[in-house]
Length: 158
Image 1 (cartoon, rainbow, N blue to C red):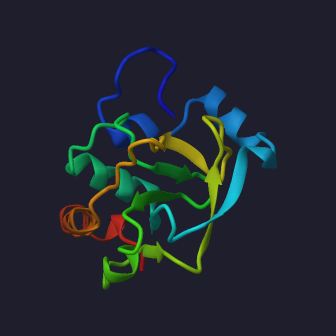
Image 2: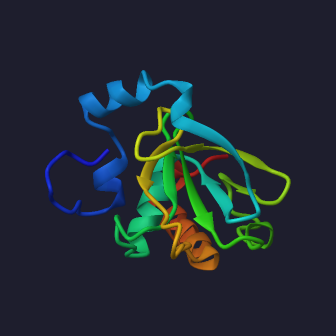
């Protein structure tokens, strides 16, 4: 998690790869009421990226501002990143990209509630209800393939 100072983090990977000790304790011991099971495919589809670091590096390469209202959260227990994309688009994208699952209509996802969340669903960037912003699926998939090429097999999931 980002540190508690009022500074803008340098990037996604720097800010969110490893939570500080206090944040880690809070997330680990947060109750089930800090998350909700939500149907995908209505307000958004989701792309689940493993491992977490790979997804964060891909977001950094897209130069998306950390606090710009994109729906992004971490599952620290499974070491995965979840990114919201425009509804109805996940099923058509990221075919052939290893370590990526797409969740659309008919899928359910555990999502963080409010600004709290827990170890399985910790908010990194909160989507705006009034003006939702989605990560461009094609650009995200291209960024993941680029990360895989640049970093080699150690970042990939087989």
